[in-house]
Length: 471
Image (cartoon, rainbow, N blue to C red; front, top):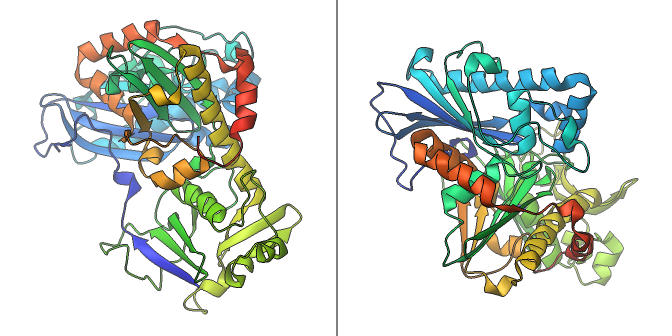
């Protein structure tokens, strides 16, 4: 039996903000600015009143460039194969579209005077129309260093030609402005602390502050946590499963489904709520619950029905395991689970987790864990020396901590903080204060970059981290 609970959370309302109070500007006048975090998969932008430095609204949506590759290497390849201008035009057009929607009902286009952009190095290059040929292989080289300042018209903006654009400085070819934004936003340079920050995304950023000595690297985690490359994966939004529990004794499955039109408690059953797919936090839960149920082995192997039954799994759960030409898969929600059998029965798609999906999650979490291990080794410290662990990214904020620790996505510690879109918040600070831009330039230069491709220990750490277990 599947029990559906409604989750009224609306992920599109997750704003880039500069303080915990999130004071919303309701008196619209004067000039405005936009802070934009351009991720490989997702773009998040917020509007601010420059006069009183208050937040006015935000938009989060999928990066339109994803049709030309799910990760940065595919974007680089497409750029170098003659699509550079196309990719630049896609992102600048989308940026202007977002700004237009942000200011709708608030101000006219001439009132938008400032824009600060952050993102990984590839996204910043594509936004600026810079050559990516040096990023295709070792030794990786960027087309520019430091920050960039230019007028909108110089960057191909047609609707906002006079806007002043500032692109945050990056650290290296694959550790970009987003890492610098996190460093500045979270003050990951304090001399009296040892801090580890993990910005979970398609291109995960890992930063270590060892009492004022800062180390940073990026890991190709892939887009699985953002719903890409997964059989039933979707972005967090209406109809997405973002929480899963398997009751081993009763054989029931409890799933939380995002319902942005609901104001009800998550304990309320929703007979008419049909899941459309699984988002990142739901995927983490799915892997963890399959482990706890004894269906999934720590090495990532998903048992077949017969093996599960031999392992003591309840028949009601084991019967959800099926097999096709690609391997075993588990059905979390199928046609037989519809409350109203007439309801969308002909068009309903089973919500499943496949063996390939599990491998994709393993690869992502192993890359993050191994990268963190390399930074710790380089700094000469251990996980037990860390005072604070910070998990950044909108996705990271909504993962269920115990589930993530169980599969080894990030370390288990009592002093862990979920900081939301710290990269976007860093861009917002740079939008509202010149001192934040100066701070960004300082730490973009002073941070020690670790190129994982050159680290001999990374591959061994990566293979060891493939196992689904605690750090």
